[in-house]
Length: 238
Image (cartoon, rainbow, N blue to C red; front, side, top):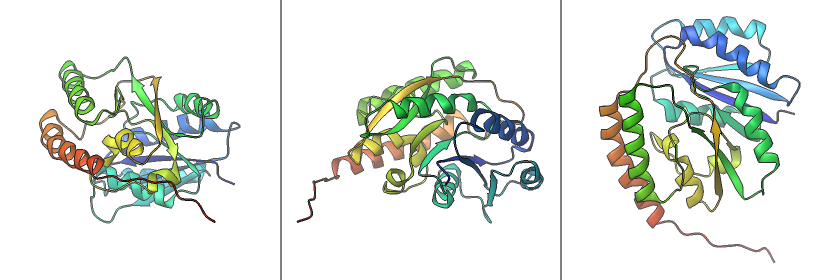
């Protein structure tokens, strides 16, 4: 029985695919029954072909392909919908997240109360450009002030969460950046865990500070509205 599904969304990451798969396997084999679910967001390079070839050497690997480019949040959600594990770990496909941190998150889960459904990575020593770090610092400060999610780093790609809890959240594009607030809205608790962060292996970033900021303004307003309009109550069967 699959206990953990590692979901990795990718777009034009052909040089990072095999090294990251090998690191995931090395971190998890012999520790837990797992699978690796890659979701190719209609890459324009040969990422999909590299993934197909990698399946021969990696029995845990499954590959999904978007027939049209749909974005990171949709890729993550489709990977989770297809996943067989009851818990999900996510990683960015650029190699900046360290798969060796997944066992650390699993250990934290095993020591925590069941009300905590999300363990969010916290990049305490980011290996990004100064402008990117500054933009992220401001974005985290604004988001925390408006949403009160008490999470220092929602943009970190490495997270561990319960599949069922995730699929119960409202879906929208870019929702992966607001998982702590959405989980809290659903009545669950969140814990931030310091993790390793590395320089990108190969390729280039698919985001820049301007497009993140423009999208983020609309998303913040939308998530704030969702939180204000949420309503929860206990139910008991008699």
